[in-house]
Length: 141
Image (cartoon, rainbow, N blue to C red; front, top):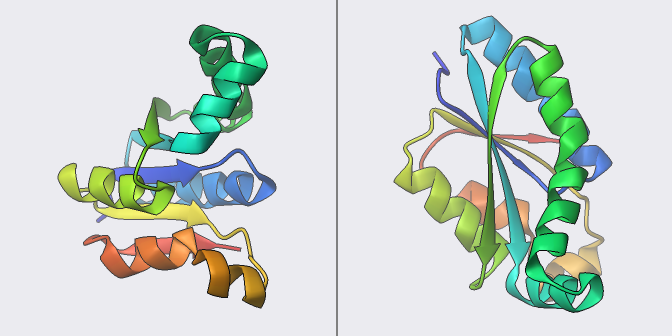
């Protein structure tokens, strides 16, 4: 069924709920691990370095943000493989490319729930991902 699972997170509460569903699905399908993906927007990456002083400090802060999700997965008896990408062309584009290049069986992500106006102006990462990823996508509210 779903042996190769990608969980795309941003560190929000929606990501924690998505992680819980990924764990549930992995347990039901017998997958031994979950690949965890966090994409940093190009402009965020630059401002993080300026805010934290250097790229190593910024990277440590990002990993600290992902630690609760990694812990949740590990506590469920699953291994986790974490990857942080820099989405120079946009977060959705980086998620889509990573998911398609690595041929996942399913992609799970949280829906942040942008307002109608925000979605019209910015577009929705989850909408773009659902439209362009080849694998089935589970969006968790």
